[in-house]
Picture (cartoon, rainbow over the protein chains, first blue to last red):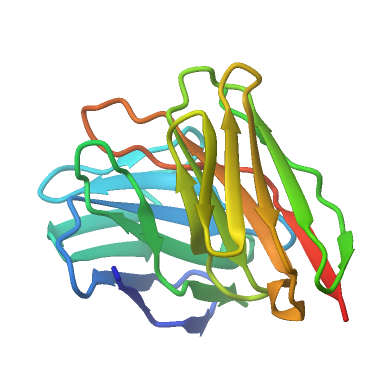
Length: 117
Length: 114
């Protein structure tokens, strides 16, 4: 099956620092990758859609200058949380899609739990 | 705004019984429907996808889709304690020009009682 990895799985940082999260599709090339955020007892909320070689598309209310997304290759997308603050503490999950016509199944990475002190 | 509604539960079902999970969605243009299972502290795991009206069976799981009623359901037969988790309904309005992000419901917390 399609496997997506994320690194790191858990990170604790001080307020004001930046954190980079990597998302990799291990056994397939992902035309499109997505970044979601999940707060405690809430559902997943889409933050942005990332297409290889182009700028990410951000959902309404998500600051593009704070959440920098780079999709440099068909197997790697990165999310950088710049100047992180405690309210950014959340579970960040990426997913990848094969992008095939007629099927848009997304495969999720294991997630990164960010805690900002 | 696209919305996906689920009863948050908890839904308690005896072991061996059928668990029935329901979901409604607001966007009539939605074309792809998914059920994910999420254990506490973990990321979602795909259970089923369904694209056409009717039933789709995979092992102990059956997904049902009724686009006219904007309703999706998931049946779990012979429920096992390991099925205890939060089940997320997700919807995608596949536009044909590329993949779109999923809209998730808040999930139904299912408890299978031994």
